[in-house]
Amino acid sequence: MATRKKRTTPKSNKSRYQDFSHTGADTLADQYLRTFWWPLYRSDDLKSRTARPVRILHENFTLYRGKSGKPSVLAPRCAHRGEQLSIGWVEGNSLRCFYHGWKYDAAGQCVEQPAEDPAFKKRSRFERIQPKTTWV
Picture 1 (tube, one colour):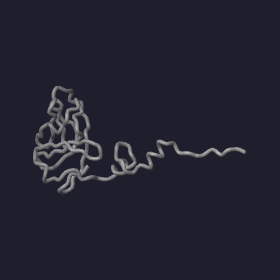
Picture 2 (cartoon, helix red, strand yellow):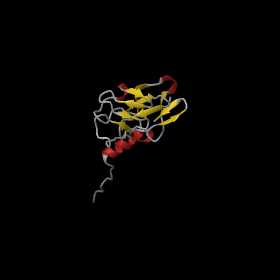
Picture 3 (tube, helix red, strand yellow):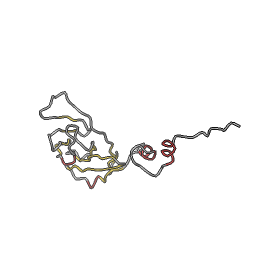
Picture 4 (cartoon, helix red, strand yellow):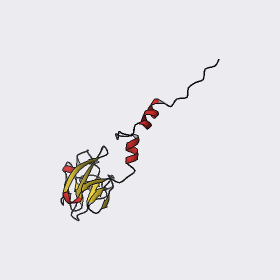
């Protein structure tokens, strides 16, 4: 009598799809939650010309409000040396890194790098704003 081979799903895939309660990186819940926009900060609490470190869904960001009054969200660290951007200072509608002075505009584009080749630019992060709330 021949024994029938039991059909199984690899353990890693099985456990991955059964766990809906954890939101760590690369979990099923994390992938689902990242398909939505999330409120990040009350706009009234973010003062003009200030930067704040923020965290949502296990990911860090830098939130700041420029001279125009519009909040912006960038990557948490400078593309140059990895310095935390939230300790930098706001210049107009841009954020300047504290360490070497790289300047990022509200769209996350590095627009100025002192002592670097002018053609060298890096992209940081994007954002979407609705009244009273900053969304990422």
